[in-house]
Length: 250
Image (cartoon, rainbow, N blue to C red; front, side, top):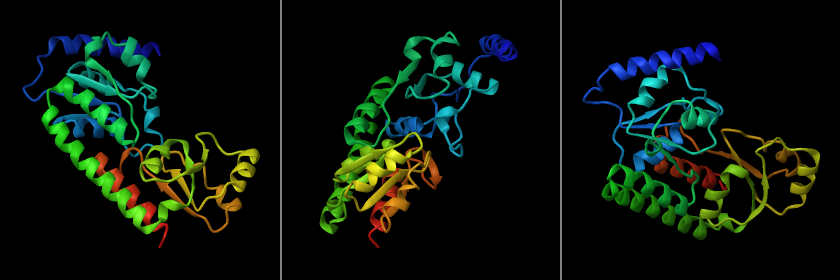
């Protein structure tokens, strides 16, 4: 810890002596999810701190090489669940107006609110509204397709972190599991719930044991953080998750 603090202090001194380049960092996002919200808000130059390949991107620890990026950022976007939050809030002498905490889930209400909060900071409201129109259209079309196919007529068991997209797609949530590992009592409770689909979270999948008590029930792992399966944007993740849900009926 002492060594890390010494490195931090040294980089602070170095950062203070270096003039930012013309193409200096505009937005730093803690992970690919907050970064996707930034892009939807109209941010052009977004630096992502936590690699999307991590099993748990929220647990990323700041490295010394991240400090110059953070110090030159016009805006740092975080969600509050990241391990690095305490360092950002109190360990780097950052101005409060540089930090922006947003909500991250796939309910349309949250997407609209968080995207516009970022856009207002960046002055990119026009672009943000256009991107939100595209996301809203995708949500409406996807929900309409599921209504027509009837796939969302059967209740689902859903990972705690995937409730928002399930509800947006019109599913009744029969039971919520996770984020902790399922215990015997959880399995017994879920076994009694009427459901035709299990929606787990690919970033912390804990619902696989449910297949042993819900024989024949389709099991799908949805995304939250973009990056896997060629996803980059919020639109990409929504499209991927919708496709995965629809494939459960095939």
